[in-house]
Length: 494
Ligand code: EPU
Image (tube, rainbow, N blue to C red; front, side):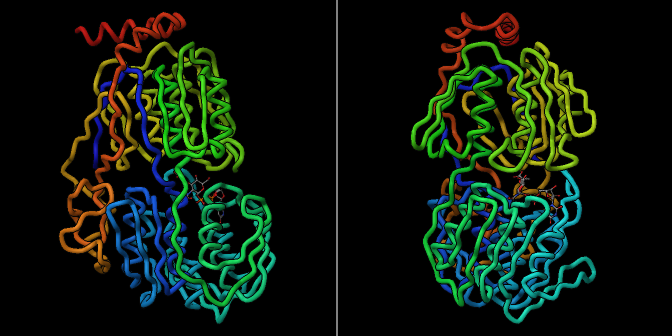
């Protein structure tokens, strides 16, 4: 188990680069299965789910190489193991994204059903129904989805719920199907559009990505391509919320502001001053922090992946907010932990009522899913003086706050879910011997070829003038926040 110790109570102040989007990179990596030619993918984020996906693809027989500029090259010319085993799928649900490409290109697949998850049941029935509509024969055998097809056929598929990975799986399958597939009520998330653009670069014929009707005219074959993954809007939003919650300021580079509209709107409502250019966003929090109510829904509405972070911000805001979660039935796991730090939150069904308190106290807390973990980090950044700990395996980075990552007795690569000792070694010119993967700072991955190390130190502070700016800002703060700043100074002097 990894732990973080955070000395909170310091306004964040700095500049940071936004990584490639996790939820775009994962399906794009799986799209590598759709062609025998090399697919070169740039701006791949360095995190555990990417490592797991590369391991999974390596086990299947895909040649994987990684260079030192966050680039991955996949060559699926000799895929001979058409299976995603339970041991891998249970660690990362997105493994289901190999199902569509495998059935479409190889006519068969055996993929473990993901099972339940910390944030909800998350079935994959719509992925399965869609493939059946395209002519695949699918049985559930011993917890595995076993799929067979001669060649998938184009179909009209209506999904009664908006599903992101469901849309992605079916879009990849349809790319190689015989005839035209129409996906109705498709997800409009920017990550779906990014995958569509990558598939188009590989020769796919796709129209309507970004709308709720996607039309895919199947082609016989896809070819290799070079593609760069879009920026991570959720990582960006998380940094912005952290800056707002601590009364700080931040500049994000390598970002596309247009994909974060719902979040930026809410942050303005909270009192932030935001400016944006083509590929940057800057935010400053000079006045009082106001509560903001949110209701999660599919894109372009407010994202479920930002709900937990906004809750951490609301716990110290002026007033009360309601936060309604409509996507996942169990995505309030952070509430109990935030309460232990002094938050005033009541949950009724899928709505949490958050009443702002003057301050949070440091405490030992337990992190669950990725976004809940991010919310606890934000809470730690807000909390006064005392150290607190959290279990968290994906480093989100921070700017000027004090932080320390503590290795524990578990393997550095991610504890019980780490599969690196079992997978077939991944081949490729850049990822063998002593060469380093992206973001490793020149160090070889501890798990051998094909495995990215877990510690991610790319997000470094861009230098801190926090104390100076915090003094400057204090003059403009509301009484509650002035008190917090006062406590903070006292805490440090002690
Ligand atoms: N659903 C079904 N049947 C299906 C598929 C989905 O009932 O066959 C339900 C789910 O249970 C859920 C809703 O539909 O209630 C939406 O789920 P969706 O399929 O859209 O979620 P997902 O594709 O599994 C992706 C992201 C999540 C993000 C959601 C919603 C990836 C790899 N994951 O999950 O990201 O929360 O969309 O936007 O793209 C995260 O990054 O922390 C994360 C959880």
